Length: 268
Ligand SMILES: Nc1ncnc2c1ncn2[C@@H]1O[C@H](COP(=O)(O)OP(=O)(O)OP(=O)(O)O)[C@@H](O)[C@H]1O
Ligand SMILES: [Mg+2]
Image: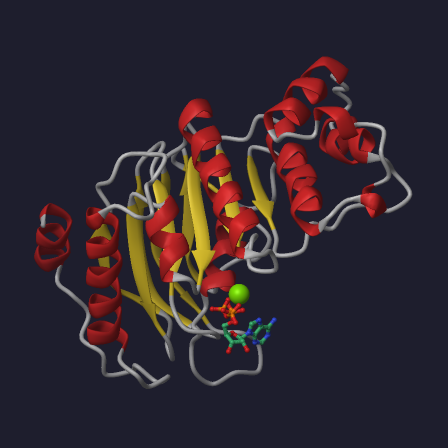
């Protein structure tokens, strides 16, 4: 069952800091939606994602999944990081099965299916150290999917990979998200990645981090990166990003779009 995520007016100030990192973030993510959160380095994207994952509690406001306040991590909302964080002394299968083992719910058949799904069916017994970066990220993906999450949270998971591997993993993850009806929240600096994967892109400003605008991406999956509509959308997003966030890092005075403007942007 896909999960609804609501972010109820989050403001967060890290201990010892005078100004808030996140300010008055209010957001509703529909079940099965694929969100990309874009913004400059340091604007608070990872901070917000950690809050959705239950790894960090906001100083004001809360995150709700299925209407319940998120207070701790859960295998139902899984986070995938930039580095795959695999255990080098375990093979591919053991790494992929780790979440299930920790939950006391081993399921070798399911692991076989997932390794096939991510294209590693023939590598199950291989050492993870013998894998390429893209293959390691696939093991992490299989591990994230093994516990049947309802929400997949991705923090720039493909940024270390070459362009070809990145594109194929972007397609693979969106295909799996569609098939399994997952709610996806992807953090990225990469406008291309946002257009390749998301059906809704949120634009964040920095100092304080706020959601200042959004754009719907209404293109069929898998996305054809050479299609004219794709190029147009990418260009529109870039223009919109620059107009909202600008060329400077401090966007304190950036105007926040009204709800109505956000709605009309969605319709456009
Ligand atoms: N534990 C912490 N204590 C104090 N400040 C923090 C902490 N974690 C993050 N920050 C600050 O909060 C701001 C937002 O950090 P965050 O990691 O969320 O940014 P980001 O948008 O993910 O950036 P990047 O794109 O570079 O990953 C930064 O200024 C960072 O220095
Ligand atoms: Mg980050």
